[in-house]
Length: 254
Image (tube, rainbow, N blue to C red):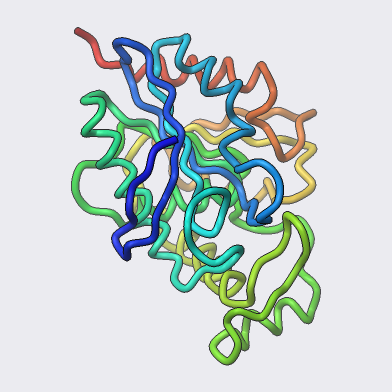
């Protein structure tokens, strides 16, 4: 377990899987999992981390703010831009540990963060990114009271909405809605290679929106379509094998 501080001082925790001589560093941002009870989000990726390490990839799995072992109010976002600063802090920490190309991987909510980061952050870009089941649009429209809570978030930003894994405050809901609109509007700013991994049995996100978004990116994006797979793709062996094949193209050579 490793610690860094976000730009605003929030303590963040990440797990590292490091072979002796890695050829690429994989930085993974997990899905929305704010519940305080139970294992941290990074625990779901122990098998993936070990597989990446065995394949010669260094892997770093961040507990995002408000999740797992990291600081921040559970299920709340004051500003979506804070997540971009958190990712930048992780990238700097990884660069100090390994001077190799970096590939970002985001799942669900984490994929939304990665996409906005690619659209907005100056400086040294990552080599590439993998986008799994991105939160660009929901399959089912939220309940009317949740939409109202998001519109009134300035009045009561910490109002609880949702339960369990779906818990988020009204402020978080408003920030995520804003981020979705911003990512869809600013797609032309993305210039790095992207691999989109999408499941045809995804009941959480609107994969048609994700496929159109990838098509708008043109040559920058490749879509890996799994017609029989649900939202949680990265636990599936053949998806992980495709991920490893993609990463092999960005390994540093001696």
